[in-house]
Length: 384
Ligand SMILES: Cc1cc2nc3c(=O)[nH]c(=O)nc-3n(C[C@H](O)[C@H](O)[C@H](O)COP(=O)(O)OP(=O)(O)OC[C@H]3O[C@@H](n4cnc5c(N)ncnc54)[C@H](O)[C@@H]3O)c2cc1C
Image 1 (tube, rainbow, N blue to C red):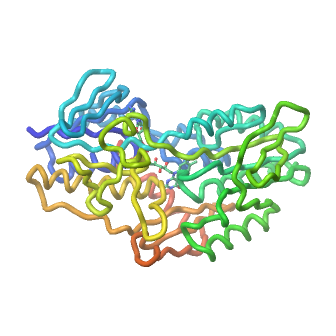
Image 2 (image 1 turned 90 degrees about the vertical axis):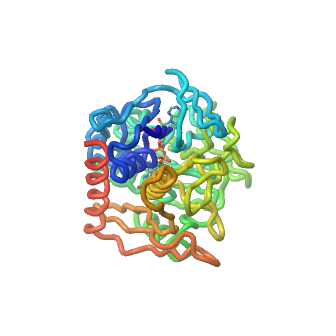
Image 3 (image 1 turned 180 degrees about the vertical axis):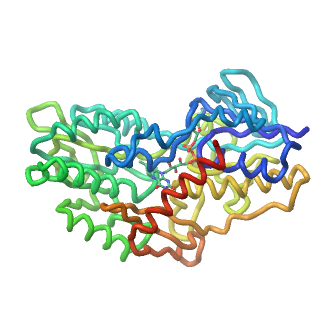
């Protein structure tokens, strides 16, 4: 029986396993390797932050896949030999007839170090949530700064969603009038991926909630040694903070960077339509890849990782003699969640030429329900 090894049990890996099983049923031997034991969607962290729902309630154990015949290996992946389709893990070596790399993207380590400063937290790290809740829960007055530290970063709308959540939490506590809230971005506008109109829409939302927008500001450092804590920007300006919530850039996983799969910048650069790498029967999807669009790169978002995972799985099945394969056409969407449980979609054809054809939809509660359904349906299909 052909053996498919899936590296990473996140959006891309889980969507791929689901598709592989749907297409090839019991004809494939599937192994999933992940160092973690649970899956949850990135936006579940922000629902936890905003008090909508605790993180645990939106997560499910990867071990459930064992009941569906998947061999689940909880281990660190330490080396990938793409030529041989062989993987070294802390639990031993695995040989595959087809390999899917879906290892996500860890935070840039220099940015993580920067966020060890007093009063600073990594907004994207689930392990920081408790401390952020504590800081927001005890703040009576002062300054909150959400700072985007560099590109690429995951889920372009998420930092703007987060700063509006901070606003909401402080309003609920009745202290908002005494807290100055700002968000800084190194980019010239809020959401370049969605274009000027969508960026202006987001900027207006920030303005309506009294959030200061500092655009075109690249963080150069954090000075928190003295009485005043502040962030220094490359243009020489500074922003004081009492609470700093930083968004680190994503970086390629070390095990990918050290393998022959890595392109010039350390990311895997598969064919953007088939997700095939240059190695026979080796595929890569999701955040660990760099996929070009006409003017930038495909956003690092779970929705895209999952869509790519389904396509890669169909092509793996086809390589192994089942079905005729599939292609990813670049259509997709990101959620933009606004206060009051309203969601807008940043949606369109990200592969369109001469520029992505991406629009921002209206924000409403029916799209919030679609976002909830997206999570519920995927968790049920992938891990129930
Ligand atoms: C706050 C926040 C909000 C977000 N909101 C959204 C949203 O609304 N919509 C959206 O589409 N996306 C959102 N995202 C982005 C989304 O979470 C990621 O883009 C998505 O998880 C990428 O999927 P992936 O399969 O590529 O990688 P991941 O889901 O990160 O999975 C990678 C897996 O590989 C495992 N792994 C990595 N390295 C190793 C190793 N060496 N050994 C063993 N295992 C390893 C990890 O444990 C992990 O389980 C958000 C992200 C954040 C942080």
